[in-house]
Length: 201
Image (cartoon, rainbow, N blue to C red; front, side):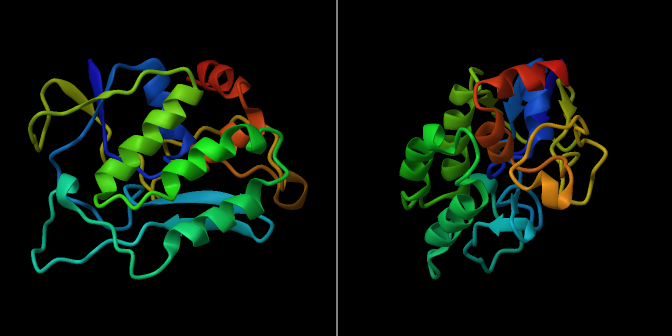
């Protein structure tokens, strides 16, 4: 049975654990949910874990369809995110290998959060040698054809975390920090990130 995942901004490693072992679909018809990975991610910096949040435009409507949720550019969050990523991973073994393609997407002014997330996901999956999942074609509160993981992978839920260690830039300072953004795995392991996911599926 397919797994149904929410859209996410530089998703955590646990998200890709499903993508590498299951036939997955991205939910395209839910409403945007605040304080979730849909517009945020965690990276490890010299000061500890830092959360990067894509600001969104707020609407009069209480519920906004995920494919209609607009990004706010009232602040220059792209530069802020990129500087944080450089600070965190400039000394990671494979940062130089991935940074240009990543920066090219991140600096584009996407109107919609869903479009930004899909572009970043497509690039990440290509680097991991994985196919981009399809997008759902309807909304279901309780899906009948999917294993529903739309809200299982959440900043407040660590049950989905992968605990297997790998080298991190600041591991000597903080020890191993599990389930960071996929950026952490890619920049530290490079092509071996695919093998790491396979071993921990």
